[in-house]
Image (cartoon, rainbow, N blue to C red; front, side):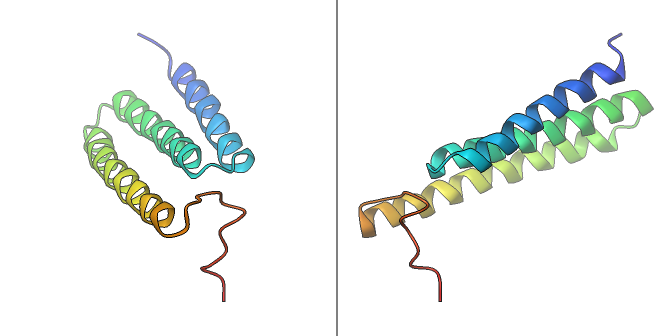
Amino acid sequence: MIPLSYYLTLSAILFSIGVYGVISRRNPIRILMAIEIMINAANINLAAFSAYTLDISGQVLVTFSIAIAAAEAAIGLAIFLAIYRMYGNVDIEKINFMRW
């Protein structure tokens, strides 16, 4: 059996990659992908602790989290598609029409 520390290390690495992707990118599609990587890192933690404690509730929560992440990605892509159709640009730094 693989030790719990390996899963936690993998999850920490994935979460760090996701944080770097959110901070360093300006393309909203890449930012959404980085957020998905961070969500998947949290899912790995949940599944690992669920398997370690022999409790299925963490795996059920992972299933719901995957469904919510899919909905979040679909809504985010739809919003960015609408912004592109209205303004012809989806660069995060150039779009400031939501500010007061």
